Image (cartoon, rainbow over all chains, first blue to last red; front, side):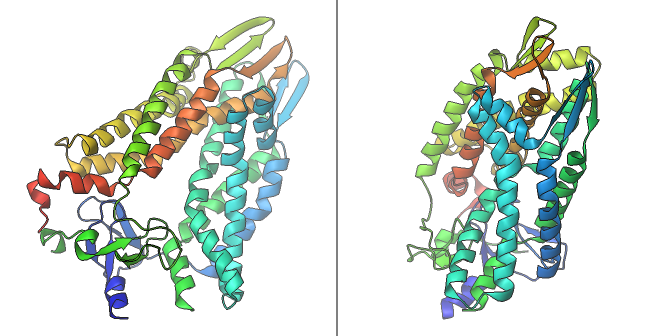
Length: 210
Length: 213
C-alpha cells in the first residue's frame, strides 16, 4: 500500500499531534518533539534474551521479596516483623481498605503482573508468533503494558521503607530483614528490564510477521 | 531545520496516532488496525472528564490535610497527627532529611499537581495566553512526579503493620488516609485521560510562532 510507506516515515507527536519526518537515530539518543519537547522515539537495545534474563531474575526475587520480613521492630523485648503484603492487609483490617488496596496494587499486584506479562510477551515473540491465538494474547498484553507500568511503584516502596525505618528508630530499634534485600534486588532488576523494554519495538514485532 | 518549516499537525494531513499503540492511521479509519482501539481526531470529552476529576481531587485535598492521617498510642497517650503536624514532629526530632522527603511527597507534589492541572485545563478551556511549551513541560513533570505521593501511604502501611502492641505502642491509620489515597488516584487519572493535543489546537490562533497553513 502506498499510504503505508508514507505512514512509516512520519511520526505524530503523541502530546501535540505535530507531524515529524522520522530519521534514523544513533543508539542512546532520543528524539524530542521540536514543538512541545515531549519524547517521540528512541533506539533501545531491546534484546529479547537480555530482557528474558532480567525478567527471570526479577521473578526469582519476587516471591522472597514479598514473603520474607521487610522490617523488624524491637521494642521492650518484643519483636514485630512485617512484609509488604502484611502491611497492606493491616491497613485494610483497620477499615481503610482503599488505602490497603492502593498499597497492594502498587507494590504487589501491578509489579507481579507486569513481570508475568513481559515474560509471556517474550516467550510468545520467540516461539509462538505463528499462532493467531497467541498473537491475540500478545496484542492484549501490549495494550495493558502502559497501565501496568504506571501502576507499579517499586521505586517508591524502596524509599518508603527507608523513611519508615528512620521514623520508627525514634522510639524503637529497627533492623532490615532479608526481604529488604530481595525487594531492592527486585526493584533493580525491574528497573533495568524496563529500561531495556520498548513498547514500540514490541508492537513492530507483532506487525512484522503477518 | 525542520522545526522552522510549516508545522503540520496530524489532522491537517489526514493522519492520526492511535491512543493505545501509537500506530499512525488514516483519519478515515474508525478502529486502529493494529490494536482495535477506537480512533478519534481529538478526544474533546476528555477535557470535561479531566476537569471533573481535578475538581473532586481538589475538594478531597481539604479533608486529606485537616483530618489526622495517623493515630499513635504511646503508653496510653493517644496522639493524632495530620500530614503537616507529622512533618513538624519529624523536624523537631531532628530528622530533617526525612522531613523534606515526606514534605515533598505528601504536601508539595499533591498541591503542585492540582494547581498545575487546573492551570493546564484553564489554558485549554479559557484560551489563556500562556506559553504552551512551559505548560507541556509542567504537564510531563506532573505525570512523572505525581506517583511519589504514594510514599506516605506505604510508610503508613508499614508502620501500622509493625507497631501494634496495644496500649504500650500502637499505630493506626486515621480518616485522612482514605481521602489522601483518593486524591492521588483522581489526579493521576485526570492527567492520564486528558488529550493534550487539545491545548495545541486551541491556542494556535493566538500564537504567531505556531501558525497553521
